[in-house]
Length: 143
Image 1 (cartoon, helix red, strand yellow):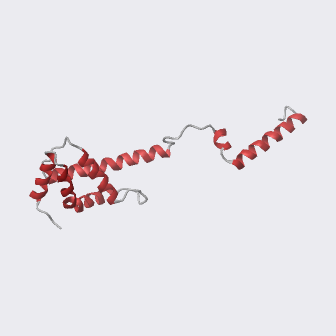
Image 2 (cartoon, helix red, strand yellow; image 1 turned 45 degrees about the horizontal axis):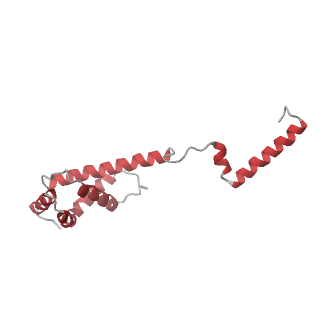
Image 3 (tube, helix red, strand yellow; image 1 turned 60 degrees about the vertical axis):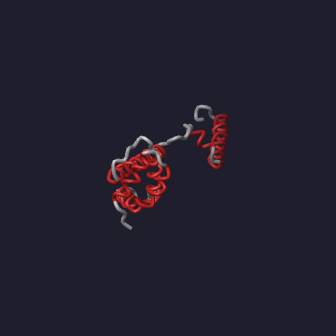
């Protein structure tokens, strides 16, 4: 469904003037175009990406309506900012994933602490220690 460009621009001006209700009436008018933009943005992403087009549209829209400092010039300006916002969301997501891959917010753990968390490996470590102690009784140098 194609809407008159001036209708979207008019609603954007109402939103810029502080009308929160304007954003509610704007969303259905721009949703399809935002999906198209999201499709273009997602085209270069990994197939296993956890964001869907819909997720990206909704998150970008929440960012857009949360910004009071933007004075929308027209619908083209709105879609350009929406596209840029989607791009930034995907970049932030990639940075977060990269940080998680490298340990992210995990607490540093020594090798022995990590080993001790797994019961089977802990038992093996205990058995090895007992064997080294028995060897030390026979020949301390070898132990």
